[in-house]
Image (cartoon, rainbow, N blue to C red; front, side, top):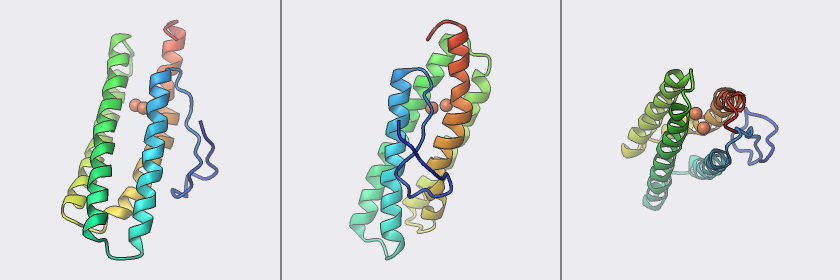
Amino acid sequence: MFERKSPSSPQRTNCLVTDVGVAELNKQHLRLASYAVELNQIVEEISARRPTQTDWRQIDALFSRICLFVAAHFRSEENLMEEHGYPAYAEHKDLHRQFSSELADVQSKINNRNLKFGSKLSNLLWNFLYVHINEVDIKYKEFLEEKGVI
Ligand SMILES: [Fe+2]
Ligand SMILES: [Fe+2]
């Protein structure tokens, strides 16, 4: 776990990701945080100049890894919630779907080599980390604790 002072400054490398009570999911959340840092570094670097072919290839590779990782993470959480009959499963799954569609939007901007992808990206992952993990994911922890699963 690491600390982050202000959610409004996506460049910060320190961040606070709440413990959701499941070691594997905590690990995945931290990896998402490190992807967010890596992505912001690239966006920051290229925002001051015109991206080269190498920059775009780097962005393509990183963004594909992020999308695959996010999809796998969502599957892990959804399987766990479904397995234990989590009552807010459908709403939670829906929020995952919304986030995935935002990622798909960004992906199409990247595919079109649209420089505007940076402005959307700079906060997308951080917002997800803060709002989703700390306010939505945390609720399955309470449920799993009450059920005696964790
Ligand atoms: Fe999560
Ligand atoms: Fe989630």
